[in-house]
Image (tube, rainbow, N blue to C red):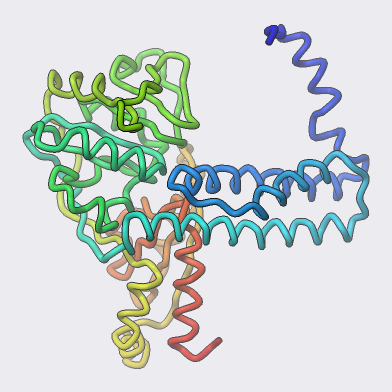
Length: 355
């Protein structure tokens, strides 16, 4: 395909940009809601597909939505389409939950170390558990520790991943702190999906960052080569790791994760006792995350102000909330698995006989 220049791209944008969706700004806004929704669905559907799970009706809805955006529509119908988008969002999250739990087991309550060891390490970020599994298989017995980063943190709670002894813990905090934390990790870093922050001019880690799957960065190496068994070939990352010093410690201790819906239901009697005794008075669901700017630390500031008898159930990027905020912080499952939070809330409602 012939590469277009910037002028041609800019001219085409005027024909197909969001302002062309409708002259009515309300309808235009609703169409954009749908577009954002199916973007998220596409990400979840891809992860499920990578594990061999698909549902044709999800693909159909995404395609129908793209067509709808280009056609005239009444305001009420546009609003109803947004609601329908939410329904399909839950469906695709349920599909991914099924794919992950049938492949890797149901998440278990797990204490994850946030310190470092003496071995060289590889840091893996993003949401693709299949990439993590293949990396763990290829590094087993080679004296290399594997650390999760940001959205990959909840991988430590899956039985078929935590069985690998060299999956030693999590390094760093929220995605937007990677510019500083990648400098101190010292070893190779693998991005399997977002969230990627473009490096600064002064960044020193560019030569040890790799991308794969749906994510990429022009300055960073990309993993595409496959082994004879169909797995991605991570040998270049592994060989680089062997030459690197261990990560620099930036924190110590442990954080507890893995409060997925089946685990909460298993603890139903204890949860109910805590509510009846007054130890738990409120349940707050937090989905989303702070941004890089100091002025956008809403979630952290909100969590700090909640009373100690509040249980915070997190999903999205919120699992990276500092564990010191409250003793009752329940880190559910990562962004891709927000359905865990929905199911957990449903189970909580059953426990309290609200549903």
